[in-house]
Image (cartoon, rainbow over all chains, first blue to last red; front, side, top):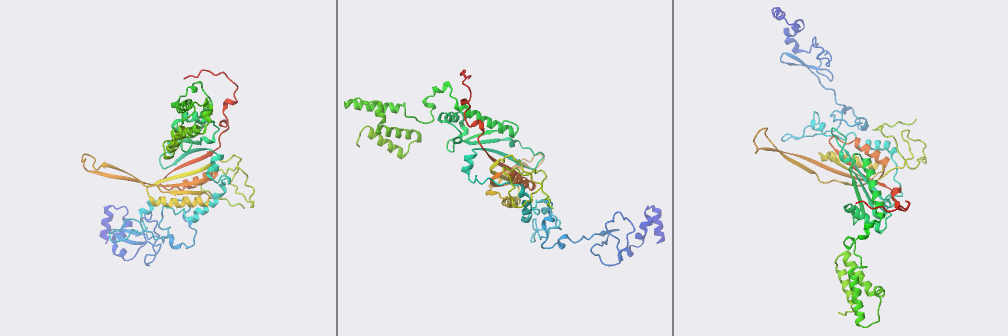
Length: 347
Length: 173
């Protein structure tokens, strides 16, 4: 023994004084846990072992691994064992936090199961930590939050309970989009787009103004729903785009009320709908009727009388319906009847 | 003693009301609430589209958002779940040559659309802030707000009636 110790000392082990007991009596050490006399800094978390009781809750046991000795730290019992059934869960998870298996008293298993086995348990389960959890947003917690936030909310005016009333009192609709996403920047260039929608029936326009506005606006007007849509995105800020869209609406409105000199040159091709007065159809009908009357040698009937007569009015309505609404069964039969009456044909 | 609420945000300046709220029977008022005379802007519809890679996360978020809307007294028009989109692409498996051997990846995006009706600007601000602060990681949101407004003064009548008669100048082409 002494020779062995001497050899160690000669080898120049700096901690020879400390290590020699270990080298000298490994058998002694393996029999019973001994107080650590070295490396206190490394094993500071393990308290000094006293007595020969088996490893208890907070006592580390010593395990031999080759020539070195390790302290095995047994963990404290998880918090779940001390949780009451009726505890306040919102104090366990008040805010968004990662999944802690020792704090969640649920027997959750997640992951791909081993062959012929079950999914892995929650202890040390990375899948459960990766996925966002809603443990901080249980229904009682949501109700608590909303109760606190309720003071900051205001009520919708009860007079505007339907879409039609909103349309009547507030005809203009402004649509904007906000974007929320995770990334290096919170800005989104699509957020500056502003869409303005208004029904032309709610604007103060007369017939000529409405037709001129529709012509000015072109594709932005929808015939079926009578809605004008103006989309602006040429300015860098949303507020600027909103101001620009309101400016466009103002300009369109006022310009459509103006009558320019060149508007008198509006021809039949520019007309939006068929107008029977001063059309070929009217001229031909009147000519035919006048010639019929002349051949029958009836006293001269004036144009106004002819125009005011029933048959001519029927004919006018049927022609207008055909041209504006297109050809349908009822339209064509109506036209047939009116022509028969006009020319006095009994078929 | 007034209980101080710990609110998730400190940026909420307070509600803005068109009318006064002093007609409540209980005299206790929240010290954090401040009322201003500015008229509220009204939102006819708030359409929230949430996009994520995991359907289970979106389902949980939908439950949370719908419950929060109900608790705050906001009417939910409908909850729509558009079908998922899958973006697939093929890449070369090897760093150099081996053109015939590729590897394919796909990105799945699930959607959930929540439509709310008839909100005032204070309610919308409160709800959106609450719901956006609790947005899970990896989930994106688009909020489409439809604001309703009156026709402004300068569009009520054509301006030509009020202007003094000026000689018509030649229109420049």
